Length: 261
Length: 321
Image (cartoon, rainbow over all chains, first blue to last red):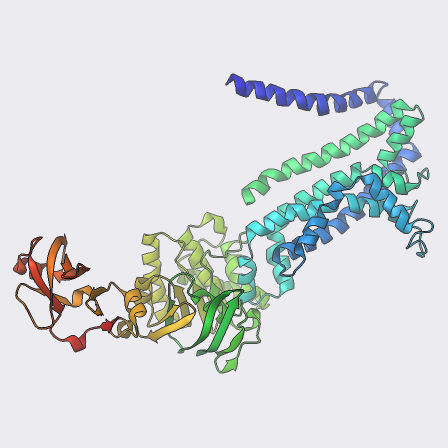
């Protein structure tokens, strides 16, 4: 019993040291100057633009990753082709490569003098580049969540649907997607959290044009470097709030997901 | 009628089916019987269009169905593990095929009600599969397969995942259902008793080949070879012959064609008595007698007896091994 209690204290202490105390301090410092100050600081034009830009990038990147993630998972689990292991290994690349390197490589490809520098629209220092960077870093989540669910569900229900006359398209919408929906939902939430919090890759490709290509994480860094500590804390608190909301949705989803499996 | 014509199928190094040809007459209930890994399920899946044969053809009602995908074959398929649509209610499961076919709602409702009545799930239409027992799920799967009024009903070890009592009930129920609905049915099973009880024709399959096809009684009484004989019931080896234990006779006096043996054990099993003897060469042999015969013979361990065929050897199944 005492050993178990000791373990519990150790686990809690570890979490407190690494997570609860720092995040708690940020929130404490945020509200130290008073609510009015905080409100002013997160309603400046720069902050509002950063907030919407962050959501816009996350929305686009997560949509792309959800569609591609489900397709990738289907290919890897149901497909019969050689070289599957290559896709399987590449899928985890974004976990392995540092986001800063991702940003730099995007600059190399799309930036001045790069292979694809002459596109009709600007990629680097603009929205497309930031979306690309975010897509890259949050790429594996949906596929990684959906793959085990697909394996567990098996393909008998799809075969049954086929014998009942359903086309592959009908079978996907009516049978496969409902069966994997909690896996998809979980992957979407993880991708969203990752996308909103992304800093390194986006920082390299953004160019930090004020009011245009500054996301919330970049705003935090900006204010911090300009000795606007209160402003940095306020923007951080806003980020933490979004993260908490995401976590909350995830926790609400989880029990249903477990009972479903 | 379904005709399977010279179907061959390989999975890598494994020869699942080798030049199999058979006919399933309209309205019949044919069992594909064989040990696990014999290729019987593969044959069923080839008929369904869930597997493509390497060579050979599947002809359904005179039409070459080989190039048709499963969706367009007009078959009903029932899986061993039910393949219930877990996120749909019983009603939605059964209605699935009709909704895909965009039938009018009133027609779908009427058909679903009728089928749920037939399979004994009336009043369960709002439940989810997870709220049903295994037997109920399989009956739901049968209703779902029957809803599209298939030309052929294919059942892949439909009772394999159920416990013995439910299995026996469902077997009898399936036979009655077939007598009512008359849809041409092919049933895959590894259980010879199930095949004998339910089917009016049995195709015995072993190592990817069709060993024999015929009425259950014909297969039991005139098996084509030792495999069919031993798969359909107990066999005893008497010298060079394979015979059924109940086709053997024991006498206490020497008799033409009978072999000398020593009684080792007499087991009373109620109506039947199993007499275990050892032949002169030491080979063990089990003889099945009725209780009256055994009592009349007064057998005891250590007795010397003579074991041979019953009176009319031409009337019994015996195969020279």
